[in-house]
Amino acid sequence: MSTAVDDELWSAIGDPTRRRMIDLLLSDGQGTATTLSAHLPITRQAVTKHLAVLDRVGLVRSAPSGREKRYHVDEAQLARAVAQLNAVGELWDARLRRIKTLAETIQRARHTESKPENNPENDPHA
Amino acid sequence: MSTAVDDELWSAIGDPTRRRMIDLLLSDGQGTATTLSAHLPITRQAVTKHLAVLDRVGLVRSAPSGREKRYHVDEAQLARAVAQLNAVGELWDARLRRIKTLAETIQRARHTESKPENNPENDPHA
DNA sequence: CCGTAAGTGCAACTTCTGGTTGCGTATCGG
DNA sequence: CCGATACGCAACCAGAAGTTGCACTTACGG
Image (cartoon, rainbow over all chains, first blue to last red; front, side, top):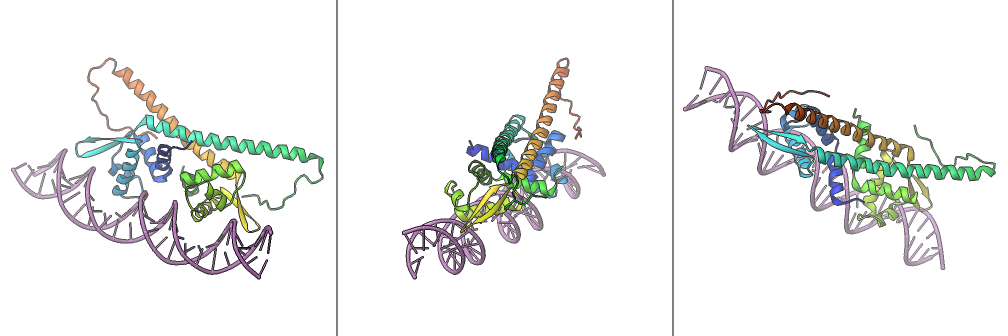
């Protein structure tokens, strides 16, 4: 299921700042460490480190252009990351559905008793 | 788009270990720090810290049972987390499709020219 | 041609998180 | 009662994220 590469991809896109960076790169098509840092609450150097991480997992690639270094998203790799997101989402979704169905089944089986909804330790959330 | 709560949820499920813990809790229905640590490459204390994080964002809840403390997944909250995953996945997916379509359009337009080096540099869409 | 501004890279330092070890405490079972 | 089991707390270590500071290249206007 979870390979080391998968975990690398995950932890790359798990960081909120890096997700925002990917968003920015996607909407502008490209960007440098300096331009990205202008839209983020962190310094250029921090952005550079994040870009290094993203570059290491292949989510972005760079192309020097004069004195600046332009980064752009690697679409294929991002598509793979999206696939991972969907995979986990669907897995959990399936498990949740299964649990829910099971709960309903139990509920139905309890249908012969006189206590349909006892609340022993269950606190409903907000 | 990204609220602070969302980021908390994300960073909670962004950690590979915590995702595995959720998997374990989902498949067994419940678990303690000790039982979970038996299936993980980390110590019980580390598991406890992760459980504290998951509990703080509401993804799991605990119920003391004698000398042990049983944790279980909060299904509603996990469903919300899954929704977040899907949201980001679909957003990026949409952007990727748009880029791909744009690329094909350019390709088709270039079909008549010979010098595609015209770089407008400015494409601020969101 | 030269000085300056813009952009980058490297290094040291702090802070926070994930992980460990060690120890103290409570609970269960013979 | 006593040992084994499960938990909690605190100190400590390592790595990642972020900062500041400085040196180095590149573009550009005088």
